[in-house]
Length: 122
Image (tube, rainbow, N blue to C red; front, side):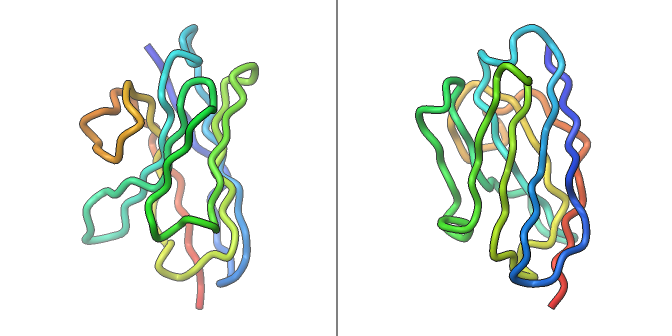
């Protein structure tokens, strides 16, 4: 069992940066693939980025490549999403998730946080 809590969201101007954190509780954090998803009003939840349990592979949706960086610190039971060069279209609620596959599919993630709002102004 894993419990996830996101933090670090907020309001930022276009071109700015934010770092999201996802704190996990439970004894098996290092066993899971960790991912970030986002959902804007009226849109489907979409995959943003994922990282394997040991950090050796990462996966990004095309729209954030070169701007976002995912990382994890298993000793701290925390996964991060560094977001640079933010654009208004990045505005969404961002969710972290723990799952069993480095995949863009929500189906492959078992545990979800409550989300943190990211708003990027023009």
